[in-house]
Amino acid sequence: MSPTLIASIVGSYFLALLVITYFTSRNATNHTFFLGNKKSPWYVVAFGMIGASLSGVTFMSVPGWVKDTQFTYMMVVFGYLAGYIVIATVLMPLYYRLNLTSIYSYLEGRFGNSTYKTGASFFLLSRVIGASLRMFIVVNVLQIFVFDAWNIPFFVTIIVFIVSILIYTYKGGIKTIIWTDTLQTTFMLLAVVLSIVFISQELNLSFSALLSKVFQSDYSKIIETDWNSKRFFLKQFLSGAFIAITMTGLDQEMMQKNLSCRSLKDAQKNMFTFSSVLVLVNLMFLVLGAILVFYASTKGVNVANTDDLFPTIAIHHLMPIAGIIFIIGLISAAYPSADGALTSLTTSFCIDILGVNKPSFPESKRIKARYLVHISFALLLLLCIVLFRSLNDKAIIDNLFTIAGYTYGPLLGLYSFGMYTKWRVKDRWIPLVAIASPVICYILSRYSDQLLGGYKFGFELIILNGILTFIGLWLLRKERQ
Image (cartoon, rainbow, N blue to C red; front, side, top):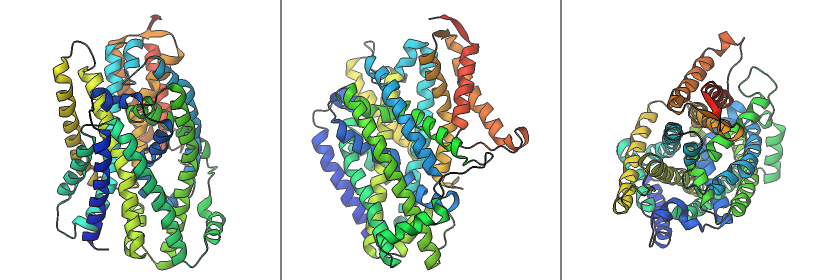
């Protein structure tokens, strides 16, 4: 596939997004940007959230990950399902009852201003890092397969990607994203299905024969029984549950889409539908991963990084249409996480840090402040992507969940203490607790072999982080509320 063809595909896709943007951003206000005027159809939100949850990380990393970890990731996915049930039945009723725009406003009423700012700041840190990693994997592929051929620097590639997201989210915000996510999810899932079909044809196997080969191979192993392994099944399940609770239920980006639904009942319909479908979709990605490994073994395809397995086969070894489908799927997986992250970062900073929704903030400056914050976060994401390119030493999804363990853990502790105890806390000291907990987790994780008799922390580090934060709050408790 020529770089010109790939660039044309990306350009055409972006034009389709602009058409959607035109119709969804007319007469947009701050309320439209933040909550979509609370008129989003739940079934549209549910379908679009599949793409937002999977992102380019799942599209690239999960298939390549199969070679090293088999299907053990499915235990994390089953944990997701448990976590989504908690979100729908515990967190969503709280958010709707308090009529929140930013979910971190809850912390202000429960604990105080310092805790509120701390919670919002940890989200901002988490989302900047997570979104940068997700965007990096897509931009890096475009750089390798398109822009390197034109001798265009990586930095310019990032600018093109970030500016394109700015253009279609700048005005409509969450209302636009709800509908663009639907388009993107459709193309992403179509790309996975068609990729499986193309590879089965190349291997001269029927679809049923290929599936049989996958599930009879060692790659289909789901349960790891070694307690000391990072992939021990119980660790994976519990980690998945708490990753879902934190990275969805305590994440402004994901909850902002749910809060744009007309009612709590609609939002819960969305969550239950979305979570059920997500299990099947993740299994489909793992099946694709096993098929890619079979193909690589048969055709002698070697890659230095597992994240490169899918693009290398799709673009260089399959028929040209497969490469086109892959590029469309990749950008369809990338945009939902990128646009949603930029919008939620803008929302949280405007409301939680600047307080634009408070009467004391001049009405005449609210939209101007939102525009300025939106552009500033776009620049910050750009710089982070440049940094991550020099640090890419393992599968991106592994990096993503490891970082989440450190940055989302304090949020887990704060909300758990707030919802399941009646204690008040010494508000001004909470930032120290939220910083100390991840630091302790890092030390324990780094030296767990020596300290814990060979035990290695996996994604369950997020649970430990939340527990340490909870204990810190308990030590700083005051009279019951």
